[in-house]
Length: 77
Image (cartoon, rainbow, N blue to C red; front, top):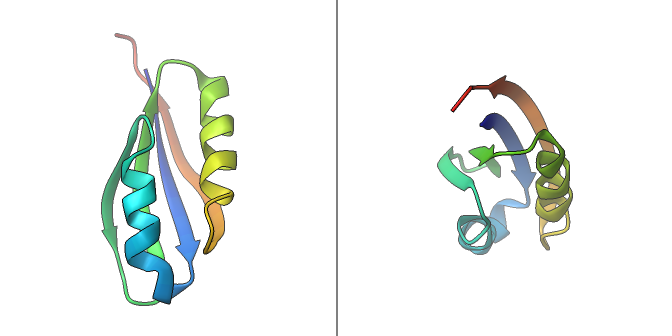
């Protein structure tokens, strides 16, 4: 199991809509946000390759400025 911590930077006025979209993505869990548009999430997946696809998907969400993996851990199941 791969667990990645991701910091998403978004336009603050789009925060609610972006969080709703992120919440529908497979393996994504939202942990918090602040008024300047930063959102802290984790992404859990079986394959390390899939995190790249998920980051690309997050960055394509309208209103998202960036998504950066800031932590990664692999755990044996």
